Image (cartoon, rainbow, N blue to C red; front, side):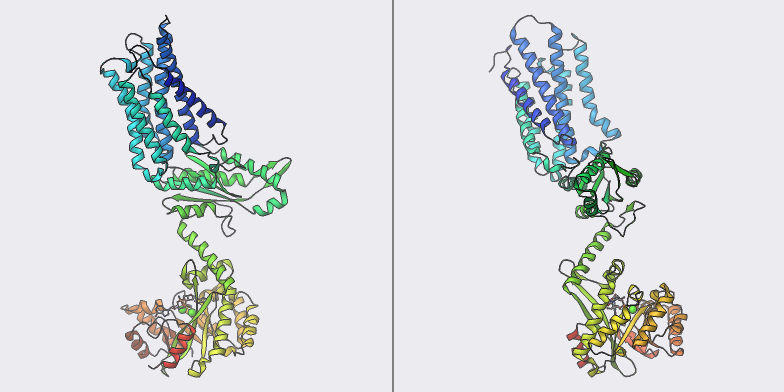
Length: 640
Ligand code: C2E
Ligand code: CA
Ligand code: CA
C-alpha cells in the first residue's frame, strides 16, 4: 500500500514514455493517412497528454511546497479531458474496425457523442467553478452523485465497445481478442483507480493494452499502394468483408482505364507513373468520411461509398466520368486516358464478396459503354458471362466441344429419317454449359463461327466414319447462327470441309432461324444462294416463336419447317393455339413444304400429331440428344 497523501508517479512516467514512443513510431510510418491509423494516433496522443498531466498533478502534490491552485486545476482538468477523449477515440476506432462508422449520421452521431459532450461540459464547468465542484472527481470521498455520473458516462463507451465487439466478432475476427482484452483492461484499470487511488497504475495498465493494439496494427504497408498512396488491392479485400458484414447498403464505383499496356509503351514508365500519381491525387480529393479510394490493378480503381444513396453514387460516378473525358498534364505533355466508370451496389446488385471483387478488379471491357456510367444491374449475369466466355476460349483451345445427335422420326415410314446435331460444352470449372447460354455469348464475342465450323467438321467426320445411312438416316441437320450467315466466306469453308471427308452436301440440312432472315434479307439471300449452288438444303428453325411471317416460306428455299417446341406446348389445353397450329400445318402442306414438330415428349402428343398429319417428329419421347456411339446404337435398335 502506498501511503495516503503521497502519489506514486513511476507508473505515470512509464505510461508517458510508452505512449510517446508508440506515437512517434506511428507517425514515422508512411501510411498515417488511413482513417484507422489516424484515429489510433489521436487516442495515443490523448493518452500521452493524460499521462503527462497526471504526472504533473501528482508531482505538485508530492512536492509538499506551495503552488498556485490554478496550476493543479488546469493539470487535473487536462488529465480528465484528455482521458475521456482516449476512450472516445478508442470507441471510434472500433466503429471503423466493424464498419459501423458509416452508420454514424444525424441522430446516431448525436447520441454517440452525447456522453462525451456531457463529460466535457462537466469537466470544463468543474474547472471554472472552483469551490463549487471539486475537479479531482475520483478523489472525492464517498459516492457522490457527481462521481456516479462521471463513471456512468465513462462506462458508456467501455460497455458500448464491448457490445460492438461481440456483435461483430465475425467481422473483426483476429482483432477481436486484442480489442476485447483492451476493453476489459480498461474496466479493470478504472476499478483499480477507485480502489487504490494513490497507486495510480491505471494509465500504465491501459498503455500496456494499447501496445497490444499497436502491435496488431502491423506495418500497414500491405494496405497502401506505393505508386499513388491510395488503398491497395489487399485493403479492398478486407474492406469488402466489412461491407457485407455490416449490412449497410453501400455503392461501389469501378474506374477502368483503357489500354494501359499501350500507354506504358508510348509514354514510358516514368511519365506514366507521374500521370498515375496525378490521377491518384485527383481521386484522393474525393475522400470523405464515407468515401474510400482503392487502386486494385494497374489501370483499375475502386471507390467505395458507405451507407450512401443511389443519387449521390450516380453523381460521383458522373463527375469521375467527366474528369476522365479531359486531359492529364504531366511535364509539358498532355495525355488523354479514356476510362469506363461502372457502378454497383452492395448487397442488392453485387450479392457476394466474390462478385464484388470480380467487378472491382476486372479490366476495361471494350463491349461496354464509354459514354455513360455502366450499371451492373445483374452482377451475377456479368460475372457468369465472363466465366462462360473464358470457358469458350478454353474449349476452343482444347478442342473440347462435343456434338450430340437427336433423332427425327418420319411418321410415314415409321423410321428415323434424320437427326439434329447439337453442340455440347462441358467445362472443367463450370461443368456442363447449355448451348442456349453459351451460343449467344459466342455470338457477341465473335467465336461462334469458329464453334460452328468445329461442329460442322465433327458432323462430316461422323457421317464418313459411322455411315449412319446404312440404317436409313438420310441427312443431318446442322444449326447455323445468324452471325455465321453474315459471312459469305462460310460457304466455301464448309464446302471444303465436306469435300475433305467426301461427304455430299445433300446429306446436310442447315437450320436457320427466322431472326437471321429478318436480320439482313440481302445478305441472307446471297449466302443461301451460294449454299444452294454448293448442294446444301435448308430448314427454317424455331417457326412459331418470332413474327412467323409466312412470306419467308415463299421467299427462301426451305425444305423443312421446324415448329418450335414452345408452340407445341402452348397448344396443350388451348383451343385458340390449336386452331393456329392446324392452319400452320395446312399452309406448310399447301406450299409443298414439310413440317417437323419439336419437343414431342409424350405418347399422347405423338398420336395427336400423327393424326394431324405432321410429317416429322423430334423430341424426348423418341430420344434426348445422344453422343455418336449412343446414337448409332439407337439407330441400329430402333423399332417403333
Ligand atoms: P434448337 O435449335 O431449337 O434445338 C432444339 C433444342 O430443343 C435442343 O436443345 C434440344 O435438346 C431440345 N429438345 C428437343 N426435344 C426436346 C423435348 O422433347 N423436350 C425438351 N424440353 N427439349 C427438347 P439444346 O441442345 O439445349 O440446344 C438449344 C439451342 O442451342 C438450340 O435450339 C440451338 O438454337 C442452339 N444450338 C445447339 N447447337 C448448336 C450449334 O451447333 N450451333 C448453333 N449456332 N446453335 C446451336
Ligand atoms: Ca435447331
Ligand atoms: Ca428449334
